[in-house]
Length: 244
Ligand code: F6R
Image (cartoon, rainbow, N blue to C red; front, side):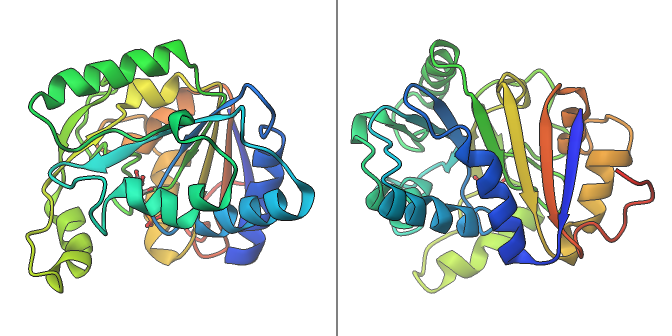
């Protein structure tokens, strides 16, 4: 079941997302978090709220969606680092409450299995998602089975190309794989909050909300979730045919 909110711009979108998230910022809760540009406005508001209103994260746990294979936590472009630079370093969350899949190690499959087990032991109260322009959520690219759990997945050519700009100036090859929560892992969250802005998301937004539920549009699986809030800006909502 979708609740769709259309905000006039990126700032409004962040405010609407914060209103939803705020309800979940209570001791004992588990937040599922995302990287990328879409949640940045929301993360700024969470930091502001912590600093101004004293909302505490001491008893909140977080689980991130994904991490690039091959990047250690210390790498400038790792998602572990992204989350610290853009959120965790400004909150009072204890490091042991933070979980980001690891993209390095001898046994990535075993690590993914262990991550899924931790998710089962710590059911996510609210899962925040961004949306890829090809309809991906987490790094579940088109074609990923709906019953997938945390796994190592291949990135598509278009995702690799999108990411090249972050790695070229380092003279490094762009990662081609990621450890990601699967679609079934995401669907276990009690509540899903998905945010998308900009016209390059419009087609994926339509696929998610109005298209058939098919593995070629991973986000379409959210049509089967009982409680999803979708927050869009006007550009991302531009291709919708129906009133939501
Ligand atoms: C991030 C993630 C991805 C992004 C998506 C949108 O952890 O899993 O699915 O949410 O690629 O990225 P942005 O927000 O940068 O457009």
